[in-house]
Image (cartoon, rainbow, N blue to C red; front, side, top):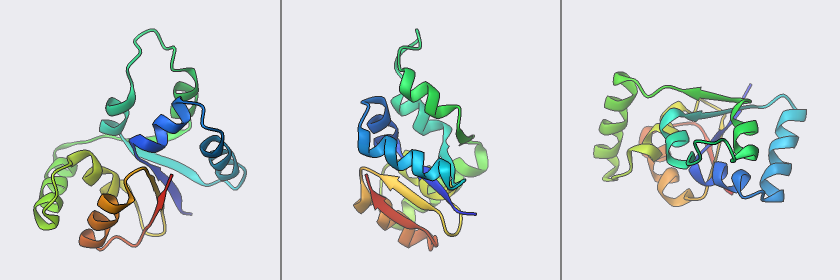
Length: 127
């Protein structure tokens, strides 16, 4: 089954309490659609050591957070080189996506380009 792959923009939308994003994720939950991201995306958005990012913390409990290991890091670097791009976090988002997944992103242009170069069979959806 396909998943929603969340970039930093999608996670920040939840952190800000944006109703449209929260509703979208509730629909995904009702339809048993998984949520996924990379660990470095979490690092990009997590700021509060006291845990006051309650909405984000609650969401992250339901997200499959993939580690950025040596293999993923190298693959991200290769993808960036092939795409002429510079953001390794975006590259990891594309690389943790699987066939049929939908990437929710605040940066559809860059992630769309990376997905195209990676020949990923995914949909890139603006959030």
